[in-house]
Image 1 (cartoon, rainbow, N blue to C red):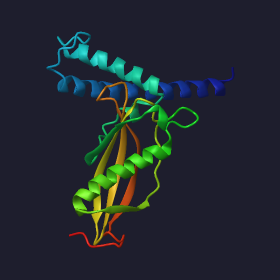
Image 2 (image 1 turned 90 degrees about the vertical axis):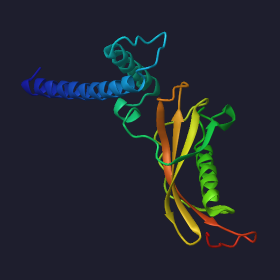
Image 3 (image 1 turned 45 degrees about the vertical axis):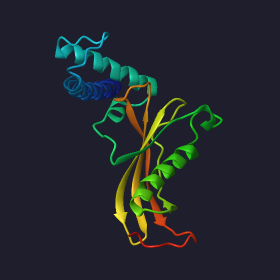
Image 4 (image 1 turned 180 degrees about the vertical axis):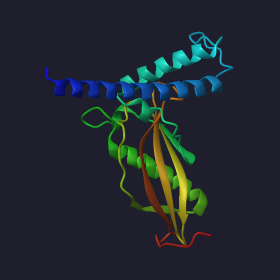
Length: 202
């Protein structure tokens, strides 16, 4: 092996080691936060006599979940949490799958649209219709049995329109802390009357 190849290998190994160390630090911080939050919990499978026992278990748990979902630790368990008001929760069913067996993206968008409509109707105090949807990016696949939660946040209120940001998060394996953002987008709704004509929001 030439000197140049050895240098490239050492550089690659160092980069991989730094990446693993960074993931471990992130997991350790989240483990400590989890231990503080769950300090009064007394689970049979989780020793709670010391902070280290909680941290050790949670670090191992995070790695197992990240490998199962095939997502990096830094993304799956970031400090980002849902923004806005919870407007809709629904379980993904086998009837909502595409030919590959994953949940159909159109179903996900329709649930976000329903959640946005529920939120905007409570503000407009009347019927609202969807007029535009900004581009959305599907970050992770949604599987059968996942719990989909749609969070809605008001961005702008116009004369007859409401612009809201909708985030779709999934909960997997019946673990509340195992929440991942599936997608998000900005939806615009307009208040209309019985003749489907835009009317001012009172």
